[in-house]
Amino acid sequence: MDIKRDIVLRMGIVYVLIVIFAIIIIAKIIHLQFIEGDSLRAQARKPKQNIVEAKRGDILDRNGKILTTSVPFYHVYFDPRIDYFKKHGNLFTDSVKALAAGLSEIFNESSQLATTRYYNNKLMSVYSNQKLLLIKRKISYPQLKRVKALPIFNKGSYKGGLIINPEHIRVKPYKDLAYRTLGYLQENAKKNIVGRVGLERAFENELCGENGFKFYGNSPDVDDNNMRIIPKDGYNVVSSIDIDIQDIAHSILKNFIVEIEARYGCVVVMEVATGDVLAIANIGKNAQGEYTETFNYAVGTKAEPGSTFKIMSMMAALEDGVVTPTTLIKTGDGSIKIYDKTIQDIIKDKGDKGTITAREVIKFSSNVGIVKIITENYDKRRSDFINRLYNMGLNQKLGIPRRRSESGY
Image (cartoon, rainbow, N blue to C red; front, side, top):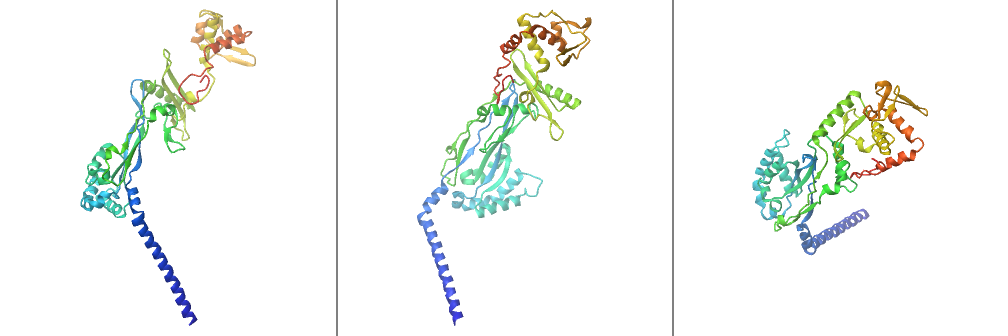
């Protein structure tokens, strides 16, 4: 009897708990249906915000040729949860097969997934389960026009459940020409796609534009055209690069780098009348042993100026009147010892026992000639030589709109 009483007691407790849970569930349903129902339904119908990407500006060469541009692609979704389907139930069921056949034809892929049956099953499944369906990523504009003309989808977002999210893909028509100088985009810490290096970064504020917003929801009573904030496209940036000259500089540099198996090299072509950079090629060997534009050596690295500094030295000497273009300089056998260093000329046979004019010092790029001019005339007044260089502005920033412009670089 004690066992029977114990069983009855336990069953009674279980029964009471079930009744309590049932009452709680019923109370919750009543609360949601009659107290919060209107509020929740209104919230469900409230338009939701979706970012509309601004078109990033193009980067052009000096002649207007497009070096970098944004090509639009579209992500297409189907949302079966709209109110219009609930009020017009036959719209979907009567036209879903035609919609599936149209999608199969537009996205004619080799895979068996891209079949009418596949799309029909997917559409029916999400319609039954009331879930969002991704139809296709990154479709072209011609494909999008065909999708928008299909049954059901031709009624738009609020009556046909078609959702379109545009995305702009950055492309370079000239491939790797000036690749590093033009730069590329990358996601930052805030999940925004911004210019990472090169002109893309230097002119980020001008290129990026301002994103807009589109509002979508389940109500067919909302005017689709008025439910948006139009994005402001970015400005185009015209560079000083001449892509034809860039092509020549790139080809010559790459051929030479490959021939001598150098680690890296760069070429800068400047229009001396204006100072405009017409081409800037940077080629280095990557981890796979391939020669590519991976780093802007011309701008991002520091090195001794080498023979280019002969020009500044000669300019200082001419300005101070210590030499004239016809002043004779004895370079001897093409070598000279300065302290513990021996300076040598590459071209040693200059005729007339190595006696050349100041003009020929530059012509032959004579290390010995320029060393003799400077040491013989400025050894006891070095500050005069240095001040001449300062007067040329060699220690000043170039004013080039690039990140972290260093003094003299």
